[in-house]
Image (cartoon, rainbow, N blue to C red):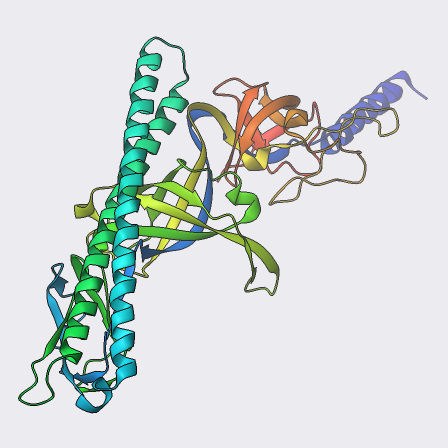
Length: 429
């Protein structure tokens, strides 16, 4: 074979080999990229809640008689002691001796309740004074740097709770005074002579507030103790949310809360006041039994901003259990458990389907603990497996404390083909 023929054949072979190498060379893997950025990170517990009155009062008929038509309607404003209904005595039932003795017993019971309310006021005043002294001591120690700021906040909340307790005790005494007046008036009406025209007996409101519901509106005969209407003070509105017991353990008293989806344009602020000690079983919409507990939230936003809210309104509750203003964050879909680089599994591999991290079957993953997590960093067109340490995470982002710098670009939802050192190409959206 001629030399020129050999040279031409060799050139054709080299060209064909180069073409085959170019055709079958590894292609870069197309991936989505996200950026590690510093911002506000919050871990919250989101749940539906509903408003309710801290105290609700049912005004009932103190004696049997004929009720005049009630002119009040839901939403009407009442003053303490204002008449809400009128009862005309039904003479036959009111003349028997047993009714007179029962009315006398109610008077004595109302007197005892009034005495108990007075004792509660004194006890509440002692609590206010004790909380004030403790707060003054904490403020002085805080100025000298001997106590933590959380202790000072706790003492301030305790002082506020003590004042609220005193207010509630005063309201309870007012209710007891009105109950005693009604019981005495009922007894006096029963002792009136049966001859002559009987006067109407007025049922009065125990508190300043609004009418919530009129139970008996039309005129008619009512029995003793029959409910007539419900009243309450909408200024003392609170929010109740049913949380899973595992979440309720993180929602300690004093935890800040955001009230959303209540119908107004702005977000309301609140604070957890109490986590009830007893849980209950509730069946979810999927038929799963859940253990839940009631969490009571006080509204701290001014009354003018939520004056349209009423009793039993549905709201969205977001309890902030963790907050950091300057946290380095990456998309939660970029974080996965760090693979085990052992001889049994060979090279590091990673497979995570869309929606979360998973096991590809070729790499044995370590336990998914926050300090054994990793991301793929986009480094000069190649994937770089980078271990990271997480402080916390939620559905959208993960808070990284070690392993990454702000501005680093990471792979979101890394496919099975992505591994350490693989060439990458950003997918254009």
